[in-house]
Length: 369
View 1: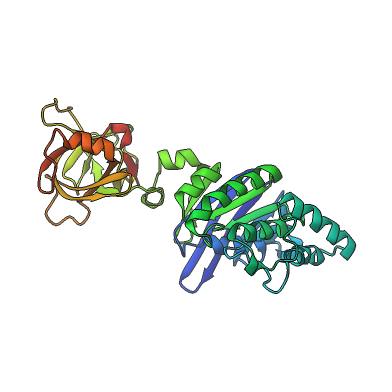
View 2: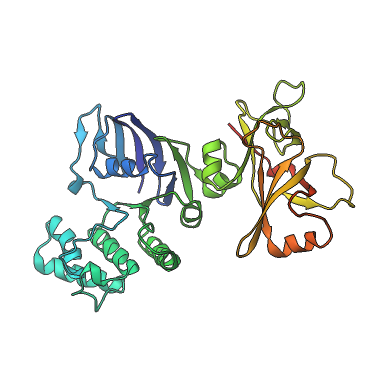
């Protein structure tokens, strides 16, 4: 199966402009609330109509503004799982599943047999007569997925599928969903604002910011080498500084000046054209004792401003000594396991107001455009 999307749509001041392809895989769309993720899925499903562009499923046009094609939603063979699952509250589990089959034109006897098979497959046997309000969050999701998959769609789309669940349920339901996706092997679009969900469930992903999608890349590449500030922020990085190439090499070298931190860094690769800033993940910094030799590069002297103890980690907020006084992004968040912090603190003064040294490896500098 394959999906091709290249569409634009305006809603007031919001402009959706997204382009991507997905194969026989679970492909993620990572973005903050209001960036256009759900609108993209609704356009693919036929609930919303793009202003222009093309949508193809296995080479067959579902929408083409140039050709005047706009296939009705019920004929697209696309399944969309909404955030709240959209179960009919007045129907039983069996009734909800059979509703999808009846909409597809199945006779009652055939629909009942198909519903029984899918309920057994989704471990819903014995719950046939219950209504949605009598089900757990995980059971509701299984009913919603069963209702979609019993109609044999070509494409499955999941819109923030864990957002309606309490935290303690999410991991269990996520594992169940992994099994379902592996078993059915459908082309799947998985939409989320959670970097962790995207990382665990998807093979490739793109980032959507203010209606515009980036290129689709392998998930591990997205997190290891984010190309833009927006992608880096969504991947969980918390430390940024505006930056510029350093040296007389015309901007093609591997050294950059971080303005907000007042420090020159050696990087693991050449600075890209259009470099805007650098990022360093909180766990990438290492603490250096005052009695150990200082590395030649990528070391900052900082003042500890605040210590925050988490359940398993220590968060240390520091201010680089070279930071400009008027820089709003100068403070750096460092994070490490408590054991690492206590081992360092036993030998080095590191309370609030104390000076410490931190370093970072060149390959841990993220160069962002």
